[in-house]
Length: 469
Image (cartoon, rainbow, N blue to C red; front, side, top):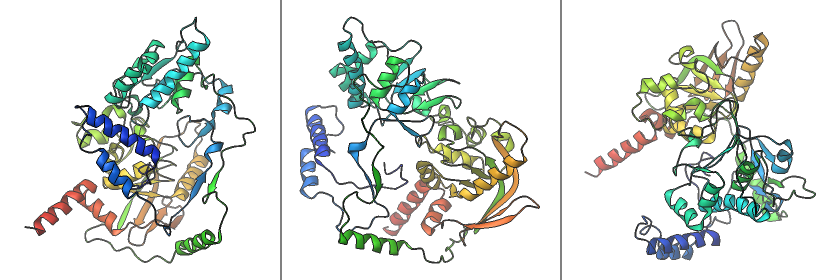
């Protein structure tokens, strides 16, 4: 979750639910010889953890506080094709959206609890119709892959794995597969899946119960036990804690706001040898939600023998097969909003670098992609205004009904790193304008100059070792 928010690390208070989980794992590790966790998770270590539990200071300062009333939650389905598009199940189900494939897979899903929840849908259907064994709908392929081998073994022991197989599910190996675009079960052009595949297919994300029920009925739907909420008016959420304000937290919020007021920026300190300016012609990939599979196809992700030249050649292949022939070294890649969403594959950043593109600019960036970029020495910026101007200009000029996926614009962008300022020249005779952007701090410059975070860490370890000899 912290990675999704582009944070390096996250600390959370531990509660009784987590303690129960840890106690079970500690007992399991102590009883079973094949558990690699027996030295890491012990009851003694758990005792130490809860003897001095992690809590935030009473005067801790937060950049933002949000609250969510869990009592107002109802099942949602994300998509198609973007987790930022969410629809309540009771609004989507009446549309009877036919599906071709259903998946309960991945490392963030397909745990024992998920498989049990999915199996319960079929078990409940069997109880309601004892003379008719529940089977997935005709024309639907249902795939299951446990998060890990131990999770599959646990589901097998409970009988849930077999329940899903009996209903017609197809078992895949535990671990990564369809989510990253590998192996069998990928969506084909024109298909609809609930849970990843071809760029011309549609994908929805849902809970294990909704996926199982959809596979059973052939359309996106909930289990028969699902009841549409009465008098539901939406999820209750907002800024703050949701609690009645007190004089103390009003004062605290006011002080935080005062501290967040921006002061005039000074020039950025540039490392010796680091470029003060980055400049190039803008290549415009006019798309929102361009995901990491579009940037670097999943079928290449685990091919460790690909050369840098090969990575450059297949960069953006799933988005636009012509990208390789259109772009040139030192171009600046500009795309729409939520660029780099999807899986966390770091090759989405390294393939762009292999293409000799020094800078990516987008209306907004997927958080994991943004973090991966800096970790691999690719610089990125968010400039919504630039995307809007490109779209306005080239839409007005185009007589084609088909959108041009990758366009050489003739515009140039210059990023003055020292002044944290970009200058855009809209063609030879077009307008020139500037905009302030975020600072590239000295520590980030060090990481980029070193060739990425891994190289920087190795260098720092080397320095420390040399200093101690």
